[in-house]
Image 1: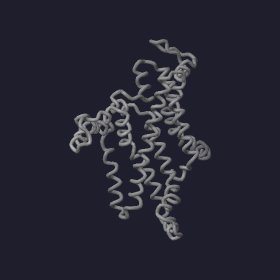
Image 2 (image 1 turned 180 degrees about the horizontal axis):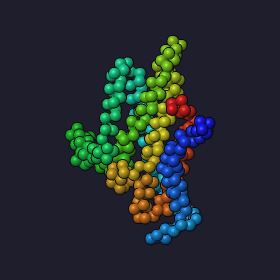
Image 3 (image 1 turned 120 degrees about the vertical axis):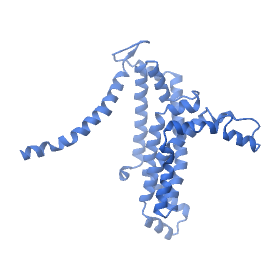
Length: 285
């Protein structure tokens, strides 16, 4: 009896996780893949195996332009979150020696996340609008005579809002990597005559790559599927694949939306695979 239980115990233990994995990940993705090959007649969809949905995507200049717009948002948001997140992480890890103050400042970085994404996005509207704080400030100091329209309902507003939303996802893993760096390595480099810039370039940044890679995966995947931020902050003037899929679902074009979702998933997986090929993130897990 005991031998029998020992033989099946590993399978019993992994059964709940396996069921959850199959039910909430594999099954939904498999369903989306299957539906992406179905036919859409304009008012209904029928089970079939057709490549028309994929052919329509790759031959549509509008859809390809939407993909390029999405990649542009992903690149800009990733760049700015890195440019903001790394200095903040460096400051917390190396410039703050008191652990209690370090924890307090780290928690301060998380304060904006105590509210919902919608509230944080809406908070930019009175700041960036024509009668907003920024335009009034520029007019009052004589930079411009009339309100500037590009601040709100533009690509600038979209990137700004998404950088605001996702910078913490870059800060946390980067900060974790920087805290793991042995201070003796930095001291050894300084004793060998390395300047502060050389220590940063040759020691700190390479050792922080795993954290930067994990943060990049978070930022890229979150930005790739965004549609609420783009809808609100661009006023419907900017396009993204997430927003396109949302509109296709709204007009009941499920096969076409599923095909776009499959392509978006494949692109995201390729980007993540490329990041993991460049940097070994297992040491951070």
